[in-house]
Image 1: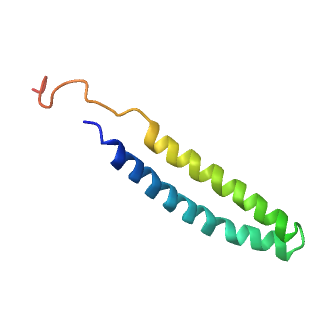
Image 2: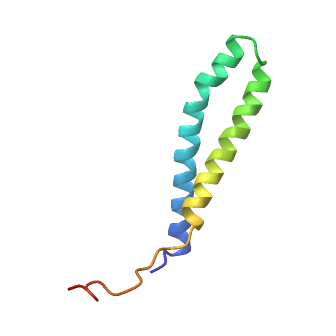
Length: 81
């Protein structure tokens, strides 16, 4: 059974929101260290974090919603001794 498009869209939006939040939380310590030790300026760090967060969030969300459904190859209990 396939989900209606409205539920699929809502599920994708929720997944994107969760992934963006997790990606930002994971990037904060790295970004702070790069800025604190003067390896990169604040603007460069912000741009890099935005790119990384977008790439990670989209790749995980699209994969989790676009993969084909796994259907059983036989009926439950069929061929069981």
